[in-house]
Length: 315
Image (cartoon, rainbow, N blue to C red; front, side):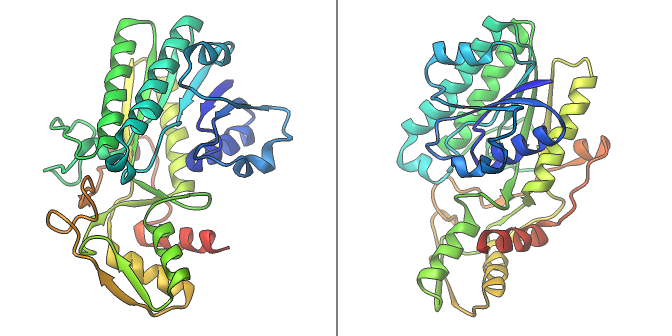
């Protein structure tokens, strides 16, 4: 199999490339390196089955060229920082929605009909049903980031039903582990390195969400892909998350424990009832029953995933 992986030098993308190569795939890895790092692929750049292409997906003609000759596209390229979508929404439009349209159109022009899209749990917004399943109908994102991911899902649905294409959409929870560049763990580690005595937490610290280790995430993605590949359905959607959730205050304690510190934890209070920022979903837990039905289970619970990830980020 020949795969095109966009966002190949990013956090999740580089781990996916690594696993696909391990399984014997041929991979075209594409990244503009605005958020991804070529170092994430360093151990695989000499692999003859990997072709890395440094380019911007916002230019359709270039995307058409790289889609030629592939069997499936794993589309992970995006501006992934939920918080910055409030500060610079145009970046999320140009880096999330436009590239998704370009990839779908390039696939259509090249007769490539398998598409895997990394969406996000943020498409659900403040879900009224917890755990939240894939068929939850009241999709109301509360961040521009979540809105762009939902817009991409709509585009995919349109292409699948208009052309001879099939799609797999995965909606990950908070993924943690080596090579991550943003998020609560990175924030806490950087703050504690700058000031080991005090840790300021955005929000009231009671934000409670599901966290999953990157190794569990990649297993889930590829197991979902195998099931989708063997099926005849036009489109399948899977949540990728954990069976439990963890409060931000508990994350702070785990990070401090791994760093050997006992800092004074100071929540800022946040906005709108304790959110860390506008657009921050305060409570999130995805139903993973669909994935469990096809044989996937997480190896680590949320707290263990956070602990393992913290150790990896500190080394």
